[in-house]
Length: 179
Figure 1 (cartoon, rainbow, N blue to C red):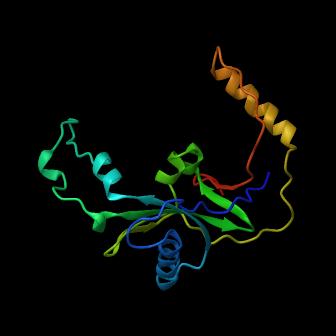
Figure 2 (figure 1 turned 90 degrees about the vertical axis):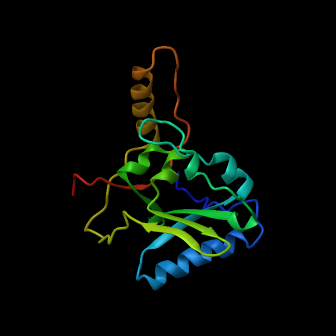
């Protein structure tokens, strides 16, 4: 099926603004920096209480580094996490590291930003492509054919579990070792 769900928008709001405002700030920044690709953005609220619970600093041996912890947390640390991917001809464009899926796809998202009350704390844009439309059409296999192949592969890796593919999303995948 075509992914028609659009970007995810945070259901929760935080103390200083709305998810839509955070999304628009990222779009405005991308425009100012000269990015001309269409992106789909997902926005997640991160209240400071949650960030404080998640804070973890370890050294290369896995030992906690106490002095690296933030001593004081407040509403000023409330943040929106913004993740995005390129869209081409209505379909998401994923680089091969985004194939992990689930929550892992956000860790490898092409666009990532953290917006707190005071400022844009972090912004990265990687794996955005200038895509040129080629000649001809790309033939697609039927859903049943793809579902059967994926089910067979999954079932051959696991002894006890049996998998049946019932849903799929059509996306562009950029493989960096191929043209």
